[in-house]
Length: 476
Image (cartoon, rainbow, N blue to C red; front, side, top):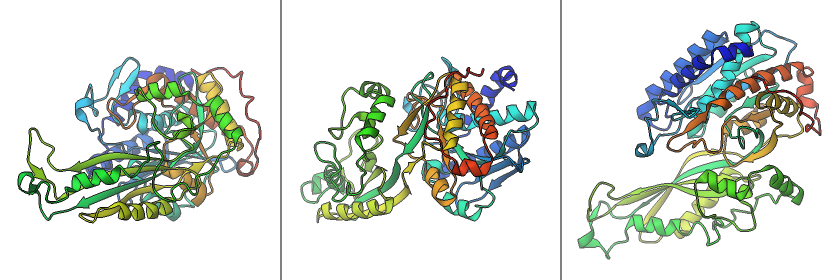
């Protein structure tokens, strides 16, 4: 089957480019038809490579794509999750090429969604194709669930999971939507932060006003909003919302030492960010600040005139978008309550404020001792030629917590992206050697799960030590 992959490398890249070409931006209603078109393309592709029961499942928003191959009653079942929706491509002026006309340059495929998450999702699809087109069978049962709303918070996914929990039963889930440290340094992600996205609107006069006639007379809502935003952090970078840190877990020294050994150094994180100076809470490394500490980012502000040249106006309203990253044991519902109370307390009497929730997701922790982790480590050693390390991520994947808590499915986080893939930013890319090593890793993972004991042991049997995975050659 690896010969099949090598023989069809150019076709696989071409199909990935075709997949990336869809502007499946779930956050923008103007792209609803594009999201649906991408779902149709993906469903047809899954059917063509030999998967069965391929369905486009409607939700209250964008559809899910489901497929399965379920012919081995005594073998485990693997659920493969990914998302085919993408972030908006703005600012378009900073892209070197059209974000939805993917190009290959310097061994990278450039385009919105190339890394997050179409390229990583597609590595699993191509692994399934390799099995089905060569062996005619898979070593395990497989169910695919590909979502179209992950980038907007997966608001319709919980109801779908509960409604179809029997259809989705599996022994382990695998998700590839995260980074490894380098092409020769694969990593198993074992922790994700949660998220809460809120919009704060400040309003003042009933209409926009002439700044010459009313400047200094009424409180500018945009200025008031800036004054409020300035009160969300203290000077050290600590979030200044009362009660915000009450449930933030204090990790033992042993865990922090483990993180220091396995995680990226401060200098590497700065290079990945393209930044010159550090910022944030003192007494924590940058890796710790980005993973075991919560964060608040102002991700957008709007208000007043934004066109070319001057305009003498006091806007009637202004809006800020806030994104919180939460850690165990913070609850998005409790944090939202604290934020609403704080915003009300710091709103000047001269204006009015309103808070709207846009999305929320809980943090997630994976069990490092689960036997599926042994399979993942062995698969990485074969696919990338190096034993993986355990890594935390500061990002959020809402489905991880849902699968673990709502369906009781242990989840493996097997990333193929690189830290400099520019996910969510201009000139997003996917390193093509990682694409093919990811295919090989997925092939090896399915084989490893198939060789493990039956599904009962996948749920119950734990191994305290999974470090002994070296010595397995890289698959090409």
